[in-house]
Every structure is written in structure tokens, then in C-alpha cells.
Image (cartoon, rainbow over the protein chains, first blue to last red):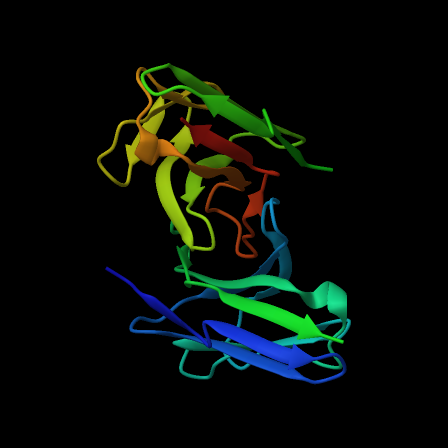
Length: 111
Length: 115
């Protein structure tokens, strides 16, 4: 089956630093989604990507759909304490019923 | 606009007791519905999904079952809970795969502790 490798598993950064995380797949996807999960809550959709090479921003967040369609990247600029949480990537094939999720990147921000 | 409701938020149950978690979606029709489980600090494991009323696909063998009695209602059940059933359960929905710009949306989750 398809697998998504998400890295890094965890990050400890200082407030104001930029963050980069990525997901790579052994298979091609038609859609990449990025989520953030706060403790005790459901994941919230941050950015959705639908075309190879697409670069999309949502405030301080920027995500890219890799040209090969086998990877995606999420960048957070000028991190703040509320960026703390677990970030998940997810990939989906066109017309598929299921998404494949990455294992998550846990982000900790220190003052 | 579409909304998803999941309850209860927290549940503590003894081993061997039954379980029923309910999820409903509003503002859409014929959605795909999903149940995920998340162990503490871990990733999301897909348990069941449904593409229509009465249609259930199970992803992993386990002590749980799912049912979809109505178009926008998805229920997760167990006849006898095990300790290993503890975890954070998430319901999710997305439009049926006829749309190009598909997105999956999650409920707020149920923290289940089996003691």
C-alpha cells in the first residue's frame, strides 16, 4: 500500500524562526492536504494543493505540491507560540475514497 | 455551510461495557464518512469509511464496528470494550469523489478511556 514519510518527526524551535517540513511518497498523488492538530482537538485543514508545482499560502504558511507529485512541503515563517501542535500531511488519488496520512511533525516553539 | 458534530467529547468506560459514538454532518448530502483512531502522540489510523447508507468498509480487524443508518449519520460501536480500545476517535467527512477539489474535514474528537 501507499506510504507517506513525513519529516522531521519533531522540531524544537525558537519564536521567530522559520520552519520547514515535508512529506514524500512512494506513489503519485493528485491532491496534497496539510493539517494542524492542537492537543485534544481534531485536525484542522490548513492548505490544499491540487496541481503539481502549485505553491499556496495561508498567512505565514506556505505549501508546495512537488513537481514529481510524490512530495509536498510546508513552511511556516516567523513562528509564534500558537504554532505549537502536530502537523499532518495527507495525499489522495483522484476519485479515491481514502486519504493516506503522514505520521505527523510535532512542533514546539520556545520563547 | 457544512458542519460536523461528534459526541461525546470525553468518555470513560469499564472493560467489557458497550460503546456507541455518534457523528453527524450537516449542510451536505451523500458525503463520504470516516472513523479514525489516534493513540496518544501518534498518527491517524483509519478504522472505517462509508460511501453511502449501509455501506461500510473496514480497514483493520478489531473489536469495533460501524454503521451508517442515515445519509449523514455515522456510528462507531462495540459490544464489549477492551483496554486496547482506548484512544482519541475522530469522525471525518468529505464530498463524494466526484469533485476535483476534495477536502477532508474532521470533527472535534472523542477521548475514550477504557479502565
